[in-house]
Image (cartoon, rainbow, N blue to C red):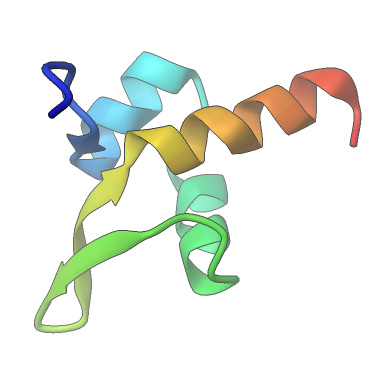
Length: 61
């Protein structure tokens, strides 16, 4: 079991990973980042998925 936090609100993810909210939500829509929703609104996103996408951006994929 991981002791590190892996789920973040969009605002927390934006701050932690330096990725704009719009891009995070775009990745969610594309199915690239897992999320949990309530009433069709994204409540939290998966930090591991975000970390992988940020690495791809940095490497220029």
